[in-house]
Length: 277
Image (cartoon, rainbow, N blue to C red; front, side, top):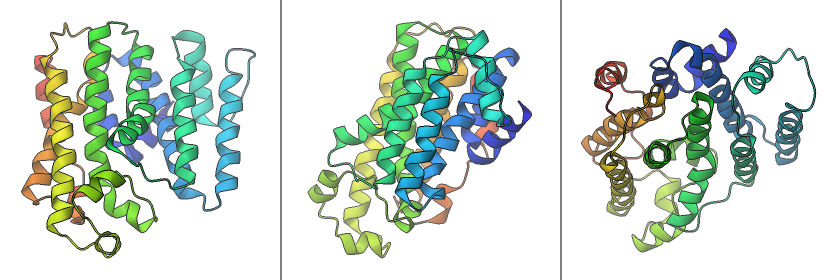
C-alpha cells in the first residue's frame, strides 16, 4: 500500500530507509507492520484522554484478532495491508498485541523503575516490531533473531535518550528512576531541561548499555540470510546517533539530537552492499 509506505517515510524515517534494502516483494508487508507500529505509538500523544486512547487500542486488538477468522474490507490502508499480509505471510500477532499492551501503559505515563523495566518496555516495543519484521520475511534462524533483538534494544535505548526532551514536554519520562537516583538527578533539572553533570552521567550510562548490546549483536557469528539485513541495519544508524550524542556532550536537550542523520542513507547503502550492520 503506497499510503503505508508514505506513513512510515513521514513518521519513522529510520525504518523507512532500512526497508528500502529489503527484497522488493517484502517491502509492502514491512511497511504495513511499521505503519501499524507508528500508528500505535502515536495514540498516547495524539489522544489526551486516556480512556479514549484505551478505546482506540481496543479497536486495534479486536480487528487484529479477527484477521484470520473471516474476510473483512476496510478503507484503512493499514488494515488493508494487514489483511493481505495475514493471507500470504507468517504474521505473529502476539508481538503486535504486546506492543498494544505497552502502549496502553504509555497512556498512564509510567516511568520505568529500573533498567530492567526499561529493557522489558523495549522488548515489548522496539524488539517486538523487529522480530515481527523477521517473521514477515521468513527468518527463523535463532542467532539472527537474537542479534536483531540486541540491535533493537540498542536502537531503543538511544531512542529513549533522543526523545527525552520531547517526552518531558508531554509530562513523560522513560529514563529509569533507579538510574536517576544513582546519579542524583533532580526532578527540577529535568523539568527545566537544565543540563547537569548528573544528567550527562545518566545519558552516558544508557549509551554504554546500548554500545554493549551492539557489541553483543556483532560478536554473533551470523550467516546473513537473504532479506534479514533490513532488520539489522538499525545498528548502523544507532552508531551514528551515539556518535552525535557524544559530540554533543550528552546534551539531551539539544534539538540536534532528535534530528535524523543526514549520512544515514549512504551508510546503510555501504553496509548493505557488504552485508554488514
